[in-house]
Length: 231
Ligand code: ADP
Ligand code: MG
Image (cartoon, rainbow, N blue to C red; front, side):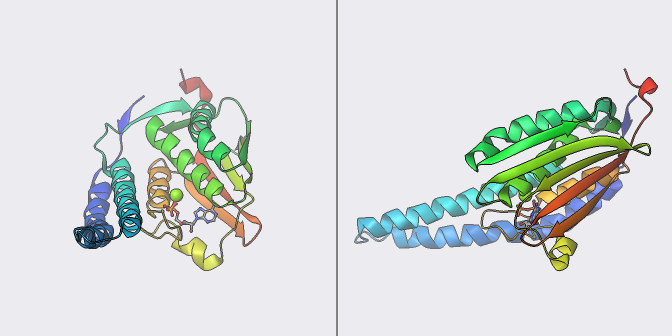
């Protein structure tokens, strides 16, 4: 079974985003340009040249991260929606953030029921799980445990992504999903926006519970499809 997701909504969001996108790109470019100009001076001490070139590189990385995240939303993929086993997709997502987690001393624990059939686009769904896992990992600067739990409750596939990180206030929770809202130096603030949209498009929703200093639980809730329709 395949069907196309509505596109008009996406086009509206894309054009709204384009303006703020240009602005977000312009900032790091202006900073990088400024440093490059200083570096043109021939009498600049080597030590300072090192510092400035490092700063230019960081601004370039920031620009690249914004472009990548924007493209993951805007890329014109064939948005085919298929019947899929959420468990397999979650495992693939977890696998792809494994190194990212290990480097930050985070252990990922999974507890996933079998046969969680959802109607979704595989790549986009994996992207959502990756985004939420990465956020959970980044919320634990000293390392910790990230739990990914999935099961079926009342015809709904429930996926919980639970961290033991810094948590969020109610005001911070309200701002989630706003384009470019980020409290992280290297953040783009596009991950949650993409995640909310993708889950909305498959008739799902995301609940957030969080306590400052304790951690956060993101729950993705998606209506299931009867497994006899799945091959
Ligand atoms: P980014 O990760 O690039 O900053 P996101 O859209 O993924 O952008 O997240 C936006 C902001 O939401 C983050 O900068 C952070 O402040 C907050 N946030 C998201 N997930 C969590 C979490 N699990 N714990 C604490 N804060 C979070
Ligand atoms: Mg993020």
